[in-house]
Length: 374
Image 1 (cartoon, rainbow, N blue to C red):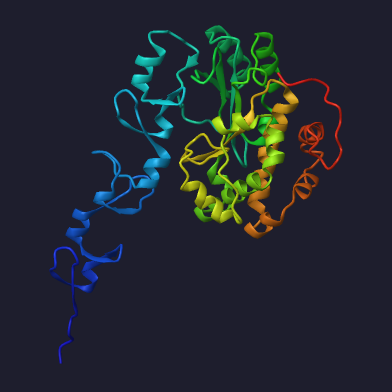
Image 2: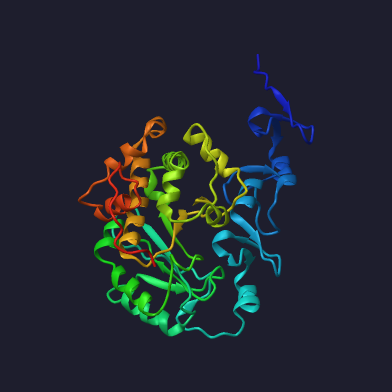
């Protein structure tokens, strides 16, 4: 007796097909043709979505989450742009061409790049890579100053470049290529760069407009996507659970945080907090910016030209990342601030220990600060 082949009806065209000729999507059984006609793939996260829910353009399909999290429309020409390709002028997004026409004008700068300049990254060292952005203000957007700073930073390899930044009144931004913590500490002439910037008349902490942002490569946060997400959820939870201490560490005010590095809000467990952050509309102006494809960005720290504070900030990011990688979600939930700071190595992170004491964040061991931040 021949085997009976069960036929299933496509929910859209109503034709009958063998079961293996249909694909289930969103509780609908669909033939290949209807699947192509009625759905599409988000070009950002690769999730399938209904054509009617596509929020992309003629050239790219996007789900709602990716559109709201990673994409902007140029204010001038309305072209859709990934956040990595956007230039901002006072929170206003532009494509590179419109930024040049509307913001930069005809100014010819040889060494100061436009805000949207993104060279291919050059990696230095091994391990977790940190890319720094240090904003300088009050000293002018002066091409020769940028040249002198780059001569110091790039004396033995290509380490830094200088960019314009529309959030500054009269300054520019130093950006480093990705480097390991050890490379930043041992091979980068940060002390000479910061001292030169001070002699040129720049301010960072005292300007009030400047931040020190740290990009962390996602691939070092776990062996696979799930592990990386677990680490990121731990990072977010640590910052929210210790917000008072981190605010004090950052040297920013609550008002400055709300403007440039807003918090997501506390949740009871790390995974819940990560989902909350992904569904938030803060965008890139968050304490930890999640909108970049290859990195997460710590944005909460105030800028500084004081070497000890500069190094302590970098060491703090490294310490948070390593703890977040090593702990489970439950272990992170039970970690206290006191346990966190007491586990920091005094040998490998002396600047961080000293800074924590200065800010009265190191287990009741404050010391007198020798000089204020600049």
